[in-house]
Amino acid sequence: MRSEAGWVVSDVIWNPPETAPHSGPILVDVGWPWAALAVWNDSMQTWTVAEMQWSVYQGRGDPCWVSASERMIRGWLPLPTPPIGRMARL
Image 1 (tube, rainbow, N blue to C red):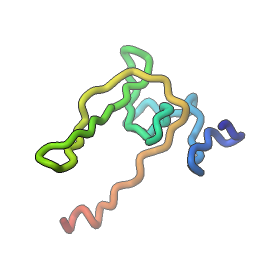
Image 2 (tube, one colour):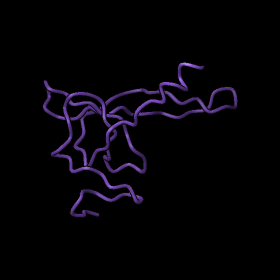
Image 3 (spheres, helix red, strand yellow):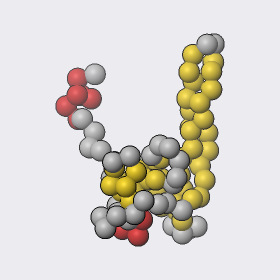
């Protein structure tokens, strides 16, 4: 659904795709039921989106990033700021 402020998906207001920065990774909506990580691919002039695969290994979940694909995005969000203080204590 499109609103004046951008895309609305599960109460999240996504920024319009034409405003997405090309300077680093961002969270994107590509139509999947979850957000994805993407970076701008300058040589292809499109977004490269990380794709995750989930399998079971020895009876436990085993997620991994397996590929990337070029996709059109429907909206974007900046990555959250990492909790630097918490990370330093780990």
